[in-house]
Length: 136
Image (cartoon, rainbow, N blue to C red):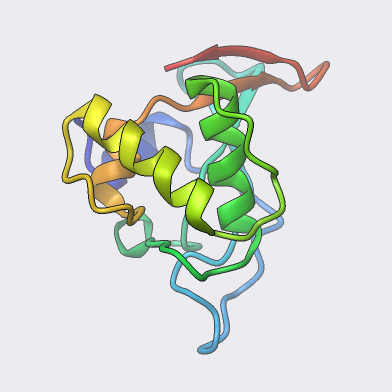
């Protein structure tokens, strides 16, 4: 699997509208658009990240923010879950993440971090229509 830096490079590294995280936020406080400039210039992904540092992004139960919403959206879109995309990392999000972690072969601890991110499939969305194109 790609490292965070390689993933950012492959995705084009262009982050749109990412606010800076305050000390009170989790290290992974924003799930924004990541444009796929290199592999597909007409699509984008929602991937939880830390602005400027892909390696330090983590989420776990009890957190509530837009990065959790991006994770929930992807669990629904690529793995068939029907989670509320409310941005609250609760028991259902944790259970879905554990199942996906088992499926992709990483530690099934219910915590989202760089290893889970790199192993998961992520949905590609059309820049033109916003519709999901594929998961990879």
